[in-house]
Amino acid sequence: MNNCFTEVNCGDCISPDICSLAGECISPAECTDTCEGRTCGTVCGTTVCGGGDGTCTLDHATSVCDMETGTCVITDCEMGWDNCDNLHSNGCEVQLGTTDYCTSCTDSCTAGVQRCAGINEGCTSCNYVWTGASEDSGVECDGTPFPTHCLVGCTCDVNYVTNSTGGCSLDVSNVVSCASYCALFPGYVDGFCQQNPNKCLPETYIGYIPEGNATLGEVLCKKYNTNTPSCCCVDG
Image (cartoon, helix red, strand yellow):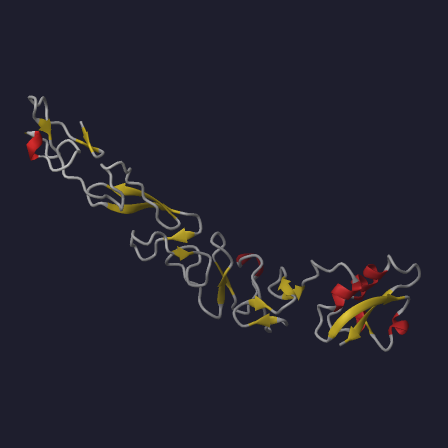
C-alpha cells in the first residue's frame, strides 16, 4: 500500500484491520485521520494526504520534497545562481558573474586588480602588464604605462571599450552621423559636414580633436558632399 507516498507493506491484514505507517495491522478505530493508518499533517507547506502533492518551489532552484523531514531540498540551481550559504530554505540565493562570486561561491576576484568577465570566463587580470595570449582575451586596462581612458578596477572610461591589447578604444558602434560621432567627445554637442577642414571654422574639424578619427569623419560626410568632405563639431 501507499501511505502518503511512503511505501508500506503489512502483509495480509485481516478485515476490518488496516495497514498503518509503521507496518502494523491496526483497527480503524486507532486511526486519527483518513489516510489509511497514519496521522497526516503538512509536508513542505502542503497537506499531502488532504489532497495536496508536496510540491516544492524554491528561488532559482530545482527542489524536491523530503518526506521524512517535511522540508524542501535543493537538487540543482538555475544557471547563473548558486546556493552559497548551504541552506535549502532560501533556495539558490547568490547570482554569479559578480566580483565577489564570479564563476562559483568561492571564486572571488581581487578588488581593484581584477574584474569578473562572466560565469564562463572568470576573473580577468588588471596588473598593468600585457602578456598577450597568456592572459584572458579582451582584458581591460593592462599595459605599461597605464593605458589612457582606463579607470581603477579594470574598466574603460565612458564611450570607450576594450581593445585587443589591454587598453581602451573609442566606441563607435552606435555612430551613424557626424553629430553622433561628435557627441562622443566632451564639449562637442553637434556635428555637420563641410567640403574641407578650413570651412569648419569656427567649429572644429574632427581630425583636430584629440583621438578623433579624421578618416571616419570623412566617411560620415561623403554621402552629403561630392568633393572633399569633412566632419565639423560644435563646441558646446
